[in-house]
Image (cartoon, rainbow, N blue to C red):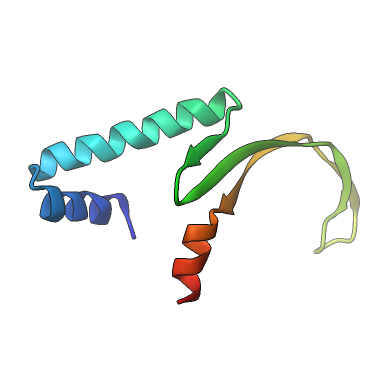
Length: 91
């Protein structure tokens, strides 16, 4: 599913124009990006929680050459599904 598919679903179910639906989708994703950039979590009730997690530097290996290297510290986004979403998926 793409952002365009989401906008089409809003257009069909809510009755907004396609342009308004696309604008809403863009606003939602820009807000999510800004929230993640600030290091905050996002909880969507009945869906799940997105967490920004810091990963420490670690040793790694290039699988092609076998050479050892240092993997730099970084931030990653993890997702934990809510129990309601898990039930829907299992059905």
